[in-house]
Image (cartoon, rainbow, N blue to C red):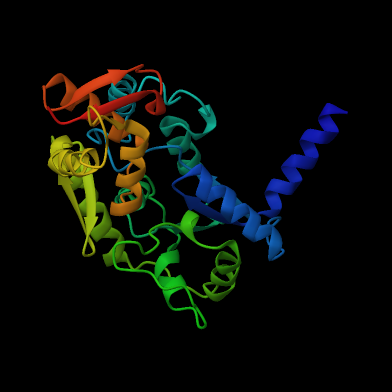
Length: 295
């Protein structure tokens, strides 16, 4: 019985001649739903990294030494975010999976307008640099903005940045509309690989995407803005003017539309506390249990 089931899975996998590569498990889930609804799930294999490419060291990737250094960096700063979970999506495993994709399989990389996806795109193309067959890239945000009849109105700061922020009905239409996308040229692939070398060989541990450019910045890049926001919020608080940390994170994500994890924001809270730039009270177990304010 087990052998029959294994063979069935192998046969099903063999039918999938197209690979969709994404950079988040949530986005991958949305894509799988969309593919099922357009009747293509059985033809396309969805792969996804479980990484936060917008932060952390990139040096010496994709080598094992670089992967270990990166994982250690995250474990030291975000010990509770489960970086060790989902082993099939871990960096080393995903690198090996990409390298083992047969040449007869078509690869399409889905990359939005955010530092996480844009860094992941350049990394994936560096891993696939020896691949001879064409590689395709689709920006779902650009494709979404070109759809006729889009009634949602976004301000410049609140426009969607990733596939996971799009309505699934729109993702289904985008899948159909982009079937004839042209592959990257050799020059484009080389340019992305050169950009990967630039962003991976730096001491700055944070990346931002602005005006179509990917830039490395220090970890402290958002600190002054965080302090300014907390000062603004605490003016509305009575008594000792402490503000709930969860409320602060919600305001940061909602107002700035940043594509960084809540774990990174909370990490910066604790760095600012250790530097005496923030005062703390409460229980440091979860963000809704502690409060912050400017001294």
